[in-house]
Length: 232
Length: 232
DNA sequence: GAACACAAAATTGTATACAATTTAAGTTAC
DNA sequence: GTAACTTAAATTGTATACAATTTTGTGTTC
Image 1: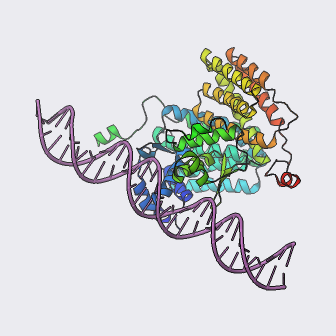
Image 2: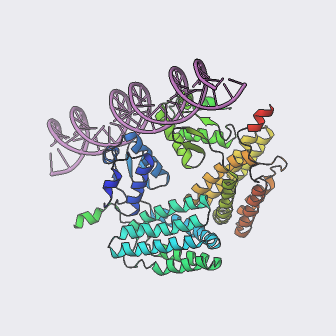
Image 3: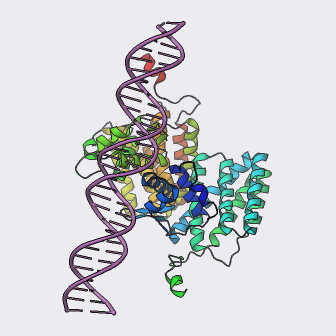
């Protein structure tokens, strides 16, 4: 909500910039899962025709961030519990190995950047902007994949992380505080030490922690506020 | 080439059907890497407007099967040696684990389907249609991912296999015969026996074989016939 | 008041029209 | 003959117009 004006400012929005803007908004939980994304609405917001808006939406649908159903239009995806499990299982398969590669290749500049990300995340949390903090937390994982210099796998991880933010929006348990700070710090230390085994193991346990902090029992998704709206 | 008429037949082509048709043609090596894919040309072939053709091309570009460069249009991707390594490294990370899951879950009907695929591949080879055989060989891998019931990972594998067919078109060494038949048969046997460890190991060594059958030394891609055209 | 039928509005799908950019050809100069 | 410049053709990018579908609202009937 803070930077919406940026999105519609002077330089004419391109298909990619719109997709990125929407992706960020979804990632930061400014748009909830299930929200309808009307083409006219978006083309008005971004100041372009529906043609380019459609291209953006199609792009986002390819990474499963939005659902497009024929003649029904686009809405922010709302992954099922099954999908949620799959996404985290995929992350548990990909990311530990990637963290190992990153530990092998990490340069001082990379470590500095990761520490800056952790710091930014902390600042966002203090500023009471949990959405932004979540986004930065995801960026941390994306950066590690980039450091590993495996562009292809990094691309997969990037989409998995984006989808994770939808899953967290739907299934995160309030009870479990997101005290990932220690985990991320320990990971950076392992990367700085080029301790491959430890980096892989830390990443694995970190992801298992995240996965288990979700409430993925059947029919428990905080869906489109059916009962919430009724009680309010 | 055989079924081109199908693509332009009575039911009006949709964006998805065009993407699938092009994907198949690329996979079967009927269209070479680097080939320009003009929008007017395609819209004429499929009998639709450029609007829907563009959607198809964008979809294919998301899975890195075609390159879209702004104001330059779309052409069939031609992956670099670096990209080729990355794709096979990703497969070596994803597919063995997936084969293990498939061994756990394989039903008799699944085994029968895999055997049918192997048979079809054999038939295609005898009919002197190596492109079709290559496609069916890829389908074999895709099916295993499907049997593993990990839709998300299966999606990744699917795109990796499609990209592999481009890589094979560019970097396959003639010398090494593609005698995968034994490998695939042994894999099916392991799946039928629910022998997870063996399935994982067979898949891994099979992929390593494929990877090493590529000639990925620098500047060795059979690119757009610079010298070929000069000598002819 | 509930259920159905029908009409109007809104939304998406596709084609076409026009603008911007690249590519190719042709021309001139050296 | 080659290089550089100019102009014309072709191709892509974007907006708009129209067709098809869904959604919404209204009125009728029971």
